[in-house]
Length: 194
Image: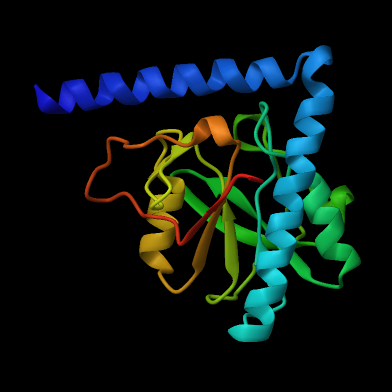
């Protein structure tokens, strides 16, 4: 019974966030979305610069291609390339997700669920200490994460636990508490632009 209640709650949270993100894609909201995306991008770049100085993290950043009203990552990709950093994005095969290096947007093609992912010729990334900018449906300030239900990032972080996990999302995606399960991986940092 408790499992059924948890699944029902997750389904409702996902529906709510999809609706709110869809609102941001309406023409009258695009300016507001652009401002929030810029603030998130600035926070990510500031954090990465600090981590590079303080913790000597690698010059490779694992990122994802935003879709469906998510916090924009394409502007962040461009900014990372302009700073001379390497960018790797995930490619899904079955229930597995691996990251591949991309040198420009031309290296991206529609993939799993029509999300942009690295083309077949892209080299596999091998940087276990890279920061992973992580998507999700909802988060808590403490770092709990609720994904989209596929478990791709939870499995990836189980296999490569050394990565620093950084979530980016809009303020309305922050919840005081979320239903989590034992296999769920928490974020080290959650950035909302605020």
